[in-house]
Length: 70
Image (cartoon, rainbow, N blue to C red; front, side):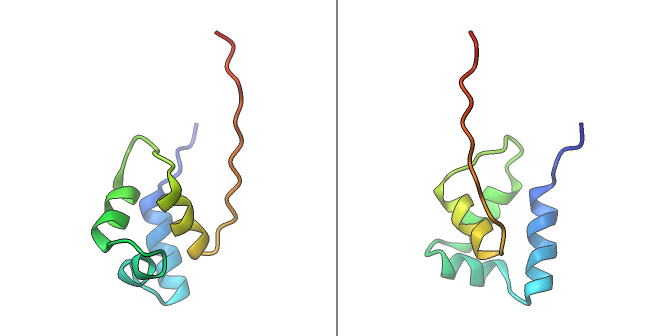
């Protein structure tokens, strides 16, 4: 299984868009350090700030919930 590297994706997208993480943080009304902490998390946390950040970078985010069989 190939694991996506969010940190690398965000950095590449910032370069392509000619923007910085600080500008993204300002656009989504949070701090640069919080944006940096979210993209470096290894446990794949998806929260409202993460979704706003990815949408600001031009990604379409669609969350799908699947009920697990217990």
